[in-house]
Image (cartoon, rainbow, N blue to C red; front, side, top):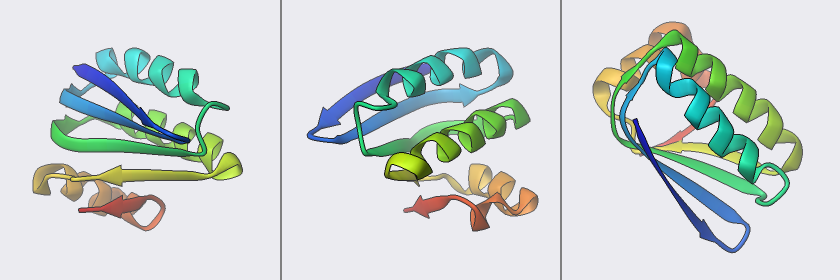
Length: 99
């Protein structure tokens, strides 16, 4: 998975590309950790994410917990096949998801 970090003021967008598998979670978690305290809003752009594993959901839940205390956490541009994972797990009611 590829991650591109874009900062605009106190908002950071991580553009993700590929599959969010267990193997990719370490890189994503490191990117998220690097912006904690440096941004009040974190946006994850899922436009190019084609698969979301359960390990990826764990990283997303941890990120939400970290950013809910400091500001906002948003997941944006989710494909239908990935949105199905959020809906089946009920996490679409936990996360702020914008399309």
